[in-house]
Length: 182
Image 1 (cartoon, rainbow, N blue to C red):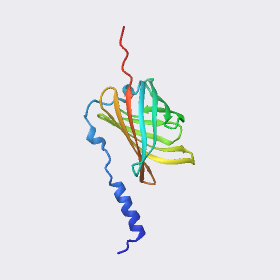
Image 2: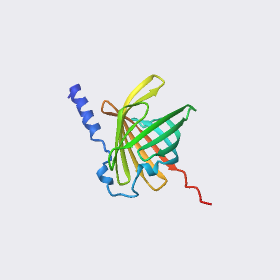
Image 3: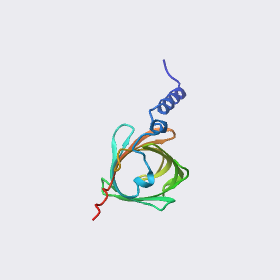
Image 4: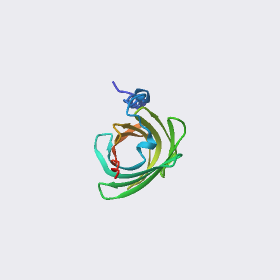
C-alpha cells in the first residue's frame, strides 16, 4: 500500500504537534516560586548546548550573565563563549506586562517575546534570527525554565521551523552565592 505524500506530511505534522510539552497549569503553586526579577538580578553563569532533532550535539557554550532590575525593566547582559572559542553578546530587556506575564526584546528577536510565570516555571516564546556560518536562520523558540532552588534554574527550549521540531537548547543556570557580610 502506497501512502499519498500529502497524507505523510499531515501525519508528520500531527505527530510533531502531539509531542510532549510542559504545561504552565502543571506548575501553578509549585515551589520554590520563580520571581524572574529576583532570580536574574546579579551575576549568573550558565552552561548549555544545542542538540539537533537526531540527538547530535551541534554546539555547546558557557554564558556569563549580569542581570539588573530597575523596577520596570529586567536587563540581562549575556556574554557567550562557544566551544570553538567564538563569542557573542546578547542583551535582553524584559518588562513585566502583568502580575505573571512578561514581554521581551533582544537583537535578533523578531517582534516581541512573550512569557508567563506560574509557580516554579516560566514559559517564554519568541521567533529568533540565528546567525550561522551560512547566514541567518529564523526559528521559533518555546523556552521553558524551572527553578530548582534559590541558585539553580534549568532551561529547555524547543526549537522549531515551520511547525516542525529541529532541535533543543538545554541550559543550566547558577547564581553566584551571596557574599558574606563583614
